[in-house]
Image (cartoon, rainbow, N blue to C red; front, side, top):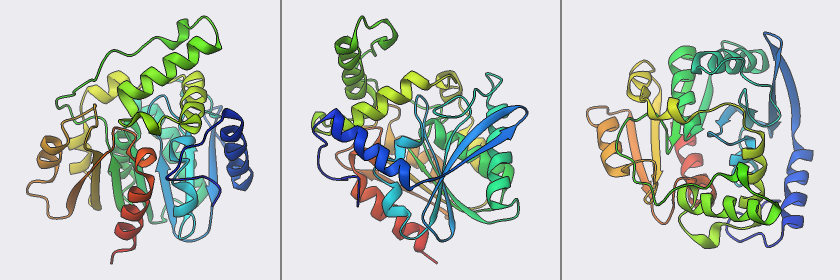
Length: 286
């Protein structure tokens, strides 16, 4: 196991080295869609499992999950259009992002291949729409999904990191924003979380905030028929987890929800071991 899932990474040098070693294990694919390139990474062997990152993110939103999941699955992780190593989406709208993501996915795994799909935050909304449009989804899991149109509970205002005067000020902004929006326990804001968040934010071109807050999750879920798992950290600032869980699961026997104790929005990072166990147990269920 390369990436520690339950202990802090102390230095930025160590964080960079861990990311580089994980990157070295990936099979990297760059696919073209309408003149733009979408980057995917593949890990492991087994049934196909797709992980979709959140807004202001990249494939590294799953940095503490990939290796565990790749022991049983072929894990496919995109940089969505407008993020990470992928080109911009070519449009500010969600549909163009979806078209590019779905077309590139089907090129990689085959349009008629049944997959499991997991999405986080804005990526949860993206994954719900992917499931509604593609249909060949065996199981769908959404972690802290956007698009629920319910109450949010911010801890405080975010800082504009783009106005940071130097690297120290940038680091202070990133640490503040992680504490306000992504991570509940300050001890979990380690060098790895800082490196992932900083690099991902710097490279994000697609603006997801308005799309995530506009709703649409419930309607997308009603258009797909797979087994559905929903999970939130108990301190997730983007939702009232208990309320949203009840709204999205009541009357739907094929949907289940979990609230993970001691975690904020970036639940698969802050409580990686619990999320990894939860996903593996649920994906392995008959």
